[in-house]
Image (cartoon, rainbow over all chains, first blue to last red; front, side, top):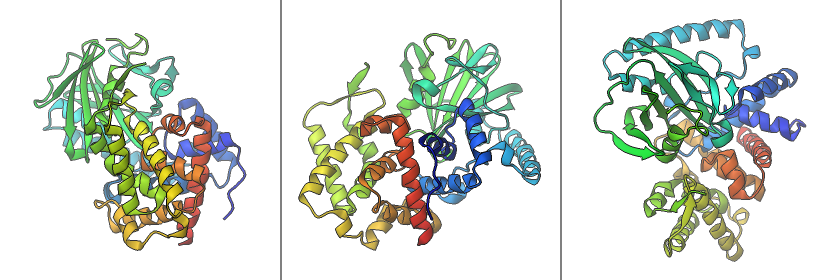
Length: 247
Length: 163
């Protein structure tokens, strides 16, 4: 089969769409491209198939990372209804499954959940989303980790906000818990980076997630997901965007 | 620029990925393990300093250099197709049979790619570098990496579908 003729920019868009690494602005461009290119879904699925096949740490398919649907305009009504039902079930599952765990672990568990809302807009080094005045960082320009979605949950009776970031095949969940800081579970490895104390945990139950717990402006922040090197999660946690992220 | 010493422990942590990368480039399990071992020995002869969190990109570049040296003295990969046992070895043992078959098909298809396309897909999909890191490692632009990645995956997908 011959490849369709696409500009390099469109090729890049499709690659990033397949890898879920689009920024909010690029996502709009991708929506236009997908709308204009009849073969877009097939191309993206082929790109994903190869990426999955070569992913060095790929877990078995049953437990593998499920990628989301392409883009909203392409969702059929039936898909939207089943998606909404799935979201309800997921929320119920989170509420039920997080009942007996320490709050910090419940926040880390959210890394395995899907986004239920679009990613917040970018605003310089920050995103247009905050909890108790603590805003989420925009790591796109500095690190290539792009926000891809958001969800809201309740942990220990507090309304939490989680923003998901992705890079190539890796995904991180950044949860901020309002109110006084939560106690961290025992067994952390404490590191200090740029004046920030970060408690690091390894959660084998997620197929090998790293979890970083730290405070921003007195609020508990939990960064969880799979990274190649734990130093990545430390660096992301400690990044202040030139002082714009509250410490 | 914030640089730190490359710790020997980092080599062990990245070894499996680098062996897969070397395998994708040279097409032989034995050669891949020799190449990574030789690279590590060379690196450990003296202290190496890398920018923070860029160990893997640095090590991949070193492995690519060793692969290049081996290619100059040994028979080219495309004259000696990978034996089936090599392709079985490359699959993740934790994966199910379906995933293992996909991995084997993809590696076999990668052998047919041009060098630039193969180097790109190895850097991003096998080793897991970010686009920007891959571009730095391959000394090219991020846009070029994404374009090459697109073509590499398309060609591999076509070969996988034809099998």
